[in-house]
Length: 364
Image (cartoon, rainbow, N blue to C red; front, side, top):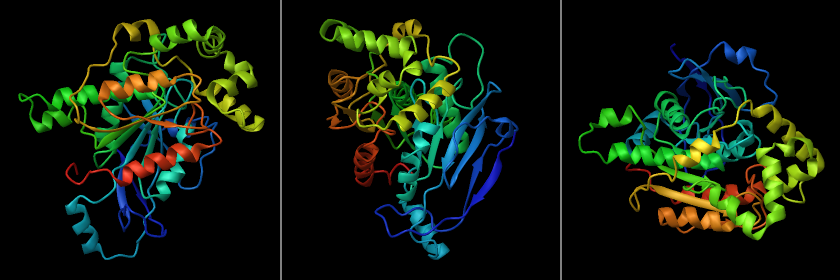
């Protein structure tokens, strides 16, 4: 089915380090009848659109889009075209959530924040989550199917090579994407057209409180050996979904102790609504790990976590960083749900600083 072309006007903000397009930009966005049937438990903010991408399977995948705001909308058209040729446009950001979440978790704070900084933002709801269609079977998918769905979305909906930003199990999916992408791009037997037909090239990636490349089994065993009470809580909260019936347990699992009750209640309800199926069959997932390694410096990567993360501990953060030979960033005073927590700005500011120093001209 052909995509509908949605024309979005830019808006003016003070100059920023990255300068987005400075005229009306036509972006192809697939919109299907499912959009009108959506329960839409999450009310969108100004400038956000809930849309649906049709996958090769025929299932519809929800995404929330927010356009990057222009800092100089009145500039001459020829100057903008010169910018495009130089590859100075900021890369789009594509956000991938983890278990019990969906596109809404990014739309609350980070989409508006990065949109104001000039970045086009796309937050996906993986199959079986949010307003996306629910596949048959006991789990929403595998590392391979989730990765393929993201690749199909980027190939058909995103006009420039993007940056993938993955949280928790979404971070593991991003790692799988990187591995698949580099496997295709390192093959001398594959043409550039064939490579792009599988996993389009990324400018870079950000892993936020990500599950390590070996999976969550190491995290579980460390908790059992050193923090047995915490291990019981994590198991009850996540595996048994007990967080859905306990505000204190939900707060301890995902948020800081300072998080207001009304916000914990609101996000807990959204989490309960979000997950129609588990993201993975964990037994099958762990059997497929670790994620294949990639060569050093093969992709620009930011790996960040938190010392107060109740799910992914500091050892897990450093395991991921060591795997990619990258110095990690450990954020103080923020919990596992870094994009929703009461101090959500801390992680966002670190990512924006990294983006400002990113080398992406040669990619575009």
